Structure formats: C-alpha cells, structure tokens
Length: 48
Length: 533
Image (cartoon, rainbow over all chains, first blue to last red; front, top):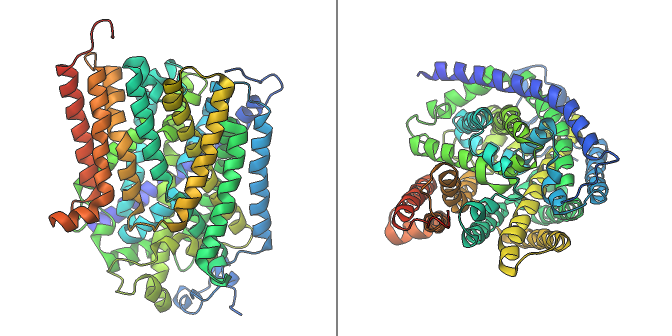
C-alpha cells in the first residue's frame, strides 16, 4: 500500500474507533450507573 | 515569570504563527486551582467509595469478585477502566512518539481480540460457568494442586514485576501535566512524593473495599476519562496548528512510511505483530486483572457481552494517546525549541524525553477546567489500574499459593491475608519506584514480564479446556517453560556475552512456542491416570 492509502486507512480507522467509543459511552455511562446502584442496593449484602 | 499559554489552549488564530515562543519549554501548564480542586475531589471520592464498599463485604466472593453480581455495562466499564490505565496511555504515547500510527496496530489487535472473545465465548464462557474466584483455581480443578500453586506463584511474580514501573510513569505524568516539574526544586523529589501519595490512597481504598470498590472506582474513571479523552481528541483535531491532515502530513514528511505500517522497511516487523497478537489474546483470557472480569460478571451472557462492549475501549486506550503523541510531533516540527528538547539528533532520529510527550501536550493544549477533568481522569486511571492489580495479585497469592499450602482458610482469614498482601505489594511498589529507571520501550518490558506467566498459563488454560489428553505433567512443564521469558529482562547482558542482540518480541514468542511443545510432549509422555482425570 502507498503511504497516502495508509493515511486514508488510518483516517477511517480513527473515525470508526472514536465514533464507536462515543456511542459505547452513551450507553455504558447510564446503564453502568444503574448497575452500581444495584450493587449498593439495600438488600445486597452478599455472602461468599 | 513565565507567560501562560491559555490563548493557545483555546486555539491560535494562524497556524503559521504557532511556534516558538507560544509552544516554549519555559511555559507553565494551564493547570490552575480549579483543576487542582477537581483532582482532589475525585481522589476523595475514590477513598469514600472504598469506605462505603467496606460495609458491603459479606464474604470472600464479595471481596474478591464483587459477589459475581456486576451487570454487563458496569463490568465492561470496569474492564475498560482496568485496561485504560495511565500507564497504558503513557507507554502508548511513548511508543507512538517514535513509531507513529504503526503503533496503533496494537489497538486494532486488541479490538479484534475483544470482539472475537465476546462473539465466541472462547475460554471466558467456560471459566465463568465454573464459578471460580481466580484463574489459577482452574488449574487445580482440571489438573492438580501443585499446578495451581505453581501457576499462582508465577502469576503473582510476573504481575508484581509488571507493575514495577507503573508508579514512576504515573508520577511523571502528574508532574508534567500540572507543570510541577518546572517549579519544584527537583523534579525527582516531586515525582517520588506524588507517587507515594497516590499509592497510599489506592492501597487504602483497595484494602477497605476489595472488588466492590474496584468496580465502582473503575466505573467513575470510565465516566471521567471517556469524556476527557474524547474532549482531548476533539481539541487536537480541531486545533488550528494541528488537525488530522497536519499531523499525518508531518509524520509522513519527516519520518516516512514506517510511521503508518508496522511491516514497512525499518518498521516493527511481522514478529512484533504476531507476538503482540498472542500477548493481547493471552492477557484477555488469563492475565488476572483483565481476565478476572470474566469471573465478576453476573452470568455467562454478561461475560461475553462485557468483552464485546469493551472492544471500542480497547481501541481508544491506545489510539487516543497515540494521537496525542503524534500531535506533539506535529508541534515539534513547527517549534525549534521543542525540536531541540525532543529530537536533538533531528526529526528522523529517535526522540528523547518521549515520556513527557503526552502530559506536555495536554498540559498546554487543554483549557483550565477541561484539563482538571482530564487530569482527574488520568490520575483515576493510574489508581484504577493499581487497584485491580493489587487486588488480583494479592488474591492469587492468598487463594492459590498460601491457602493450598496451609490448608483451608476461613473467609475472614482469606480477606485478612489478601488485605495484608495489598499493603505489602504497595510497599514494594514505593521502594521499587524510587530507583527504577524507565526502559526505552516500556511496552516491550511489560509484554516480556507478562509473558513469564502468560506463555505457560495460556497454553495450560486452552489445553485444559479443549484438549482431552492434556495432563498435569504437561501443565506443570508448560508453566515452568514460561520462565524462559525472564531472559527478555536481561537482553543487554546476553548481547554483551553472546554478541547477539535478540529482540524482546523474539524471546517472548519463543517462550510461547516452547510452552506449547513442553505441554504437548509431557502430556503425551506422562498422561494422567483415569482416576486423576
């Protein structure tokens, strides 16, 4: 591959990678908060 | 009094004017009291989480794997948080400063491995079904007790050695991003002080809260850092002196095609690509701090979803710091003073002070407030990697070495010993971090130390799960064989004696191959009896 083609490829990789992470964060931040609340819920004292 | 460069942090009008003195080494970072307040608040919150989690601990499963109750969102945030450590960001930026986007190949490998494991459930699903507390427990379940003890012992040795350079890299980041290195009487003193305070905080909340506090602080870190890193990436890409075209253009013009392909002439080469593919795959399935996320999920489906959801995080944790490093290179090409500091032998030569690249850029590019958020996130990243490592390796020592040797231990005794282990490893890190010098390629050091355990453990794990004829003798021999990777730590000495400089990745890959051979040969020659099976 030429350097120009590689540069273009990395451009696409970054666009997709950063975009996917942004979407992931949008989902994981609220759903993770729900999971944290469940972990610390009033009846969640766990036995081993 | 040095001039602050807030104007440039908000954006410079004309890229042609960007250069000395705007990006001067004399300038202090944009770090202000507001940023310091954000950082302090975050650190206090992390300790508060440890105290709160301490009240929820009802047994050893709750302390070591959070009661196996984490949903996929929290578990994947925690998994990304563990991998997205400050150390990861630092070594990625150090290597990318020299090797550009070719280094980001590792991000693609890591992404692919995570998707593969999530889709297939290979290794991680059967491990979760067995309801283990540590990976080494499987070695006793499938083979025998001595294999478990050996696996646990080698794992803890490799893991603690692997952690050895974490503190110094974290503290180097903290002092450069805040500009403290420019004002303190001696930067070494500052680095050691910062390192000590951070380690003490991590040890405190990990001892108190165990895996519950690890899960929650990892989650907090994910929130803060995902926002901070995306804002940082946007700042780099939209800055008038930077932007994608300028960054890749500078790399291509001054350092050539090897900045974009690992297999270009004078690049990393295929051995590096293959070795790192094996390392990332192995780490995901048997490196305790990461693989334990397969055990903390509430069920098998959540385990697989964790790895699938975490895939974009696997890309970002290496891709964004690499972007920061290449952005600084772009600024270096525009600023004679920066070139003299980072590339005294010319822009095509290897850089110096590469560990300062990312914190230097962030400290001067991001405006006050956002910088505090990013700094808090990165310090959180420093802490979250330490907490996972401290807890995982201490629990491996407790459950897989001490308990099998001493006979059964009560839950309370296991928790007490694990807490003591966390404290002792913390003390070791403080002592080690003071005198340890950062190696040229931090990543290779980490991959090689990890290989001491991973080469044997991966073979034993996969062989045990998917090969019926795998035997205890084969497992024991393979774990011993992994110790050959230690040679990678003495490369310079070996080169002096033999006159041959063997690259770290060749030694690492050879160790994996050696373990496979030992495992297969010993299993076939010394099979387990029917009763043992």
